[in-house]
Length: 111
Length: 113
Image 1 (spheres, helix red, strand yellow):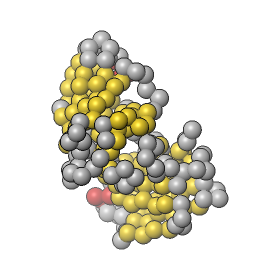
Image 2 (tube, rainbow over the protein chains, first blue to last red):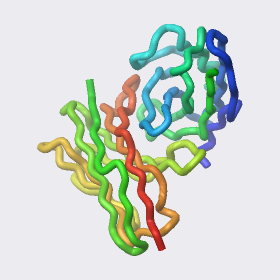
Image 3 (cartoon, chains in turn green, orange):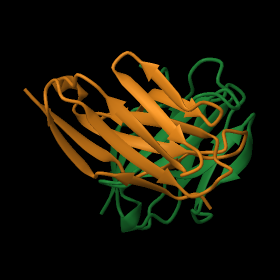
Image 4 (tube, rainbow over the protein chains, first blue to last red):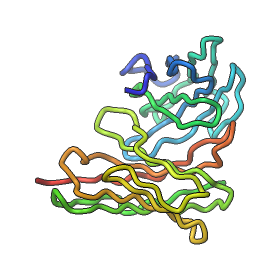
């Protein structure tokens, strides 16, 4: 149990729709990261937030956006969903340079 | 950018045997190397990590070794048990604010009793 909770656990969307995924960080952690994990692959870094500011971004298009709130919870928003966006989306939290702890993920299926 | 290669992709052992998973990285600036275990339907769980100023680290049945010159690191599991069956991922990063973990593609470990 890492203390990182994500919602929803599963969801199904159709191509072109928008989705919002939510994450509650482990208590005291000021940094949250989002990763995309396709089936059979390792997690790929989407972006990271530190004290409500984005301070790192992977190779993902602008339709992937995020927010971090004052209580350090976070959202991942994906616009104009594509079939290839189907994946497990993982939220992870840490102190600024500490170990990274993952939640159980949100499984997104795009039809 | 950083690239992490992981081998083997699948590994089957008998209960009680040892298992070794190897990773190589490309960016000599990387200085932090964690290992994660992911069980079916769950998120990755940190099991051990090592920093570049250390050559080896042990935690009960698990150990990690690092060779900075060759840019490779390995996970060693001794006395494997059926509950060790999972997917294992290695990762590398510069372990500073704003940098990401770069993951390998994973190794599916199966321990049969």
